[in-house]
Image (cartoon, rainbow, N blue to C red; front, side, top):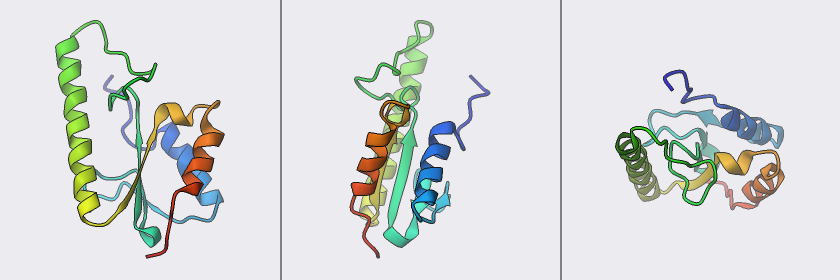
Length: 127
């Protein structure tokens, strides 16, 4: 588990390539913002978080299965991740940022076109 990346994951790269191909320019992993969003679109005052279904506890997703060993430890970790996510989202909302959360399962081959269409339909208004 220690070799699992936290940045520049395959789902992040898919979203970044898509946005760049559509003419969007962005920053990545901005440490100045709470939660270090995966993609920051400053021109639109929008941040995009790309959550792994397992690590962030995506309810109702087949990719979120609690391991059979050390369940208490894993549940504590996943719940802490959820709490940190919620805290960061609340602070960003207070600062006036638009927030988009994409899940890893939404970026799988069978769902990706629908997700990208939905992403482009979000109101990205100029600041």
